[in-house]
Image (cartoon, rainbow, N blue to C red; front, side, top):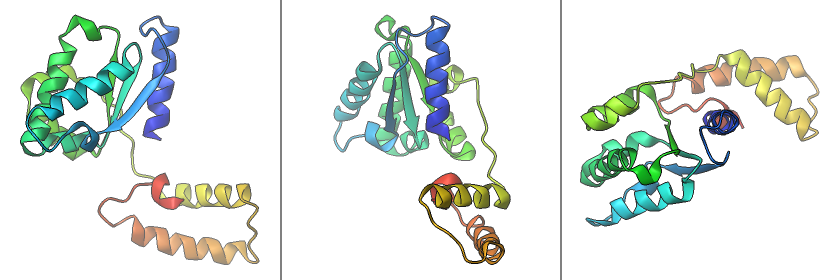
Length: 173
């Protein structure tokens, strides 16, 4: 889902001449924070340098809004966004909407630089069943009674979807 969209965005931005190359460097908010003062900035800069000319995709970016090292990561991103060295680099952040908003609220400079959002609505039960069926066929699984399996999956997905942290496709497969 989100990573695929980041890859599509990289290709589109490249085709429009806004990126030098259509590559995506994937990381997470946790990967951008360190355990000691000064290490976080280096981790952020290392990932930015790997992504130069393309897209830096930060999944679960809301983790950067937590603790002093998360704040350091946010500050390092803001500094990079104003540094000419990183011109032509796109940064895509992803995560749960409320958590991302909280993270952006920790740094006004960061919040003002992320002004375009794509919201991915939670899947419906039918979407989950469809993906499950597709993956099962891909793996050559067969069901003696597909209607019974669908009914069972329907009930199971309805329960799972209520759990905090439900991840749509990630949790279906």
